[in-house]
Image 1: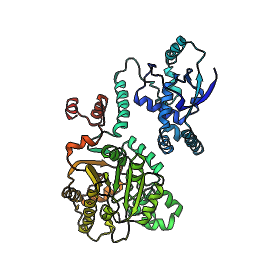
Image 2: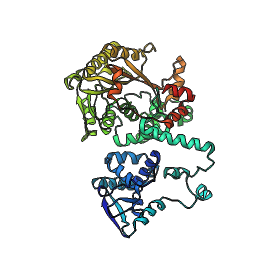
Image 3: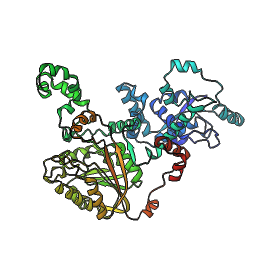
Image 4: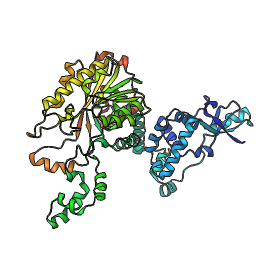
Amino acid sequence: METTTLRLSQISTNNANPRLIKEHKFEKLVDSILVFPKMLALRPIVVNEQYVALGGNMRYRALSYISEMTPEEVAFRLSGLADFKKKTEAEQIELKNYWSAWLANPHAIVMNASDLSEQEKREFIIKDNVGFGEWDMDMLSNEWDEKELEDWGLDVWQTEDEGEGADIEKRESSAGVLRERFIVPPFSILDSRRGEWQKRKKAWRAIIGDNGESRNDTLIKSIELKYKDLYQKTRAHRQKLGISFKEYLEKYVSEEEKRKAEKKVTATGVSILDPVMAEIVCKWFGVDGGNVFDCFAGDSVFGYVAAHEGFNFTGIELRPEQARLNNERVEGMTAKYINDDGQNVAKYIEPESQDLLFSCPPYFDLEVYSDDPKDASNQDSYEDFIHILKNAFTESLKCLKENRFAVVVIGDVRNKKTGFYYNMIDDLKRTFKEAGAPLYNEIILLEQTANSALRAAKAMESRKVVKVHQNILVFYKGDPKHIKDNFKIIEYDEQDLESFRVDFGDEPEEAETEF
């Protein structure tokens, strides 16, 4: 039997094939093919005369799934795979180019089983999926990497007497299903410090490429934080010399060393919107294919994520250099940035035309973005600042359709003179309620805090605790009774409920009552 290449559209799946695959296993198969497409030439899809798949149905399904992706989506998925990260830069580029070319002409290598009788074809369907052998567990344990085997879809640690290990396996599997539906469990605390969140965030960052270039050093003012590693490593030497850290930098540290040290700091001097949080907002509170907008756009993250997820995005950004950079990043996508004051949002967006308002406005003077007198972060008083936010959000709500959500990410800040909080959270809640969109959900976003230890020691001198969270305020314009009419049901099953209970320590009876 010879192999040939067929367009994917010429092949049909075999509905009579009794072989099934669980969703999380299918995802692993897709990942496996993406990172190792040469495998397809070694295991061609077996078809009959009508090009119906007799063997390799799952590989055909995986290829069909991949064919619906864009090159950017493939690159995003690859960037999160361990096997992809092990490749050299040249190999990574070659793999991305392969899939870009393949997506332009989706195809598969097949072997025609026309020489088989009908009975032999039926027999082949079953025997092709039967595993007669067993794994040599000692060899797998000693000569293969456990994580690699797991990534490749091999359940090597599952035995007939599953015991406690099986419960862990089931929880991990259900968590994989859960991530596809919710990204994270839909509860009022989001923990961005978790490994899966950070992995997803890193993958988003790689394809968006926004590192806050237009506003470097607007957040980190302390040189001790900016060059954290150098500050810690040179402590003994500075004490011996009897000089300050500033003097040490000037006399003993080259510009190249400073740049290297600066790059190691997680927060590079600017606050960049968390793309995973942006993805969650789109998935939980957006309408598929709808219009979303932001009157305080800032960086390009939300626009990029929203367009990537199939939404039409419009952002209003005051600073011309930021608006220009953002438009460059989203070129060719369903996103655009308009250079103007967020208070003028209604000049560019039609009344009741938008399906989701999402914004992360300035946190008053915590991070001053420009010297423009219209910049909310550049106001002389908190009262002037909150007045700008009130005007912008009131006008924005006029652009939002009835029975839609508005989501604002905000964190309270202290008065630099008195040390007391301004109570910005309550001021925003009041603003939205007065404009016709009361608070519907409040979510706490726990943040990764690489510099919190350095800040905590000094802060506690005046008994200030270091804030390591932001508030995600979810408002609703309209009658909540109509939410089910406009937002699709996100289905969950018993496995999901079990995953919720594991993550949050709920008793089963309480969890079932809640849901």
